[in-house]
Image (cartoon, rainbow, N blue to C red; front, side, top):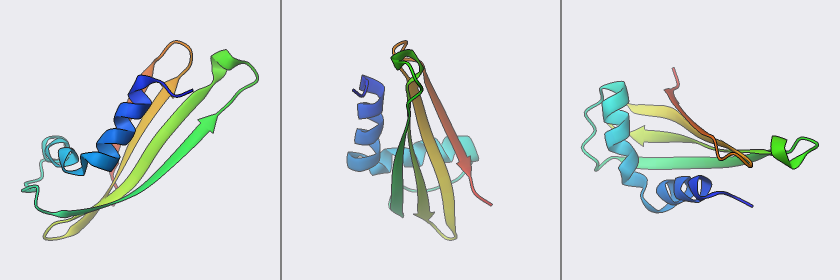
Length: 94
């Protein structure tokens, strides 16, 4: 059973793709306008250890922003059960 953070993360990636542009601009000092094409390649992993307390879900995506020069990024959201901890990682590929 997914928690609320996983659902919100998937909604952002699937329904609100343009919302990632201000985040990329802020973190990586880019100047995207929001009109750039974005292609997402989502993936989802479940790490299920022997007990339910050790269960984790990682939702991640690789995506390309087609600006003046196409750039590839990785965005990952990792949540754990049952404590609801969440980690978000984002980086740019070389």
